[in-house]
Picture 1 (cartoon, each protein chain N blue to C red):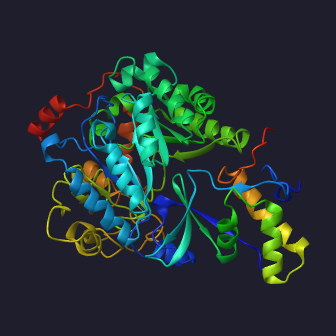
Picture 2: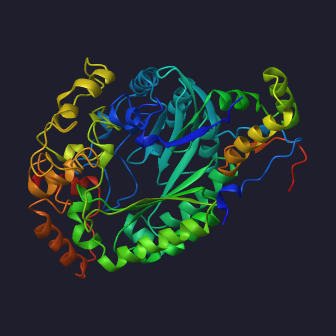
Picture 3: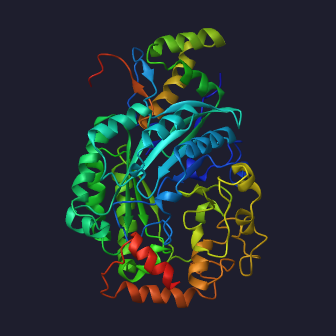
Length: 107
Length: 395
């Protein structure tokens, strides 16, 4: 079974407005000079790219806008960026550490 | 742009965030999470309480200002998460004020509570102060057994109500279930209860036998059959509830061949602070009565105490180890097991943890446990100040 490829996470569509829930906090750890994501009983360690994406997840920007911005900044193909961003965000959403701030978000 | 990665690390086993496995576990940089016993006062009387038998008094507790200073100092050192524990932390009237301060200095706040003092108003006060996460202890899956174990009538119903208040306030919830012979048979129902009340995490922790639990061992020690069943139940539930409930499982070491990697190794990844401000390598460290612990009330910084104090240095690393630990291939895996257990069962904290099958004491001690497990002793010596006096006087 190709279990690794199957994600149980709710995939965000490009109209979603991703944001961290109140109990997941992006925090700059001065002592270790890096960003961490603080969640219940865990510390998550995002790499530079993940930090940049998470900083854009303010509940205002849509996923489409986030991807557009990154594609422009890195002068990279939009499709590639979209896959990368969606993968990271749905992984976090599956763990309950990212939510969709869209007003009409009734499943 | 490269693939982005978010790596997940349990806060209580994290000391450094340098990336490599070696750096993370091989050094003793300041721990990412610190457990603070705000008070030893508690309305519950659980016979396996992790507090020392000699409970600290209300009059000795750190003041509001002292706790604030401690939190600021911890945050400056690089501590990221602060666990408000006890006793029952909600006994402290200044809890919301302390939560607010913790948030102001950037700490992630976790409340570890019996929840029997929770009200709608208090949940709101704590949530407004910025509380991040709540952990509620449950003693069983239904009131009759649970209230008897906690020594608190009506407690179980209060906890269920409190769990709902916590979830309604939008706070994430962890259920903490301490397991032993008199409630292990309720584990499947406890798992269902955790899901029903909206917990995202469940900690299934088998009793560890020192302090109060050691005094109650004959009434608590599970049978081998119970433990085998427990492991199967946990594994099955983990698979079945993937995406709904994360289950952390603390295995009992009495029937194991290898000792637990206690506290991630003495003085390597963890410390806690007692109500009076003592800085301890583990919650049970005071059971080792020949150690002296520095306090945040003294003139030493917390960083100095962590790095240099005698109590932390004494069993840190491998230099203190006797044989068979000294030449054992696992000496940097389990770090010799648990010092408190070695002290409780052999009288010397510098001995090999008898949970290890290589300990010369292993067979004798664990045969005794097996014998106790099949007795019909069900009487608890409850954890309260009166019994604390009795036990302390006797020792």
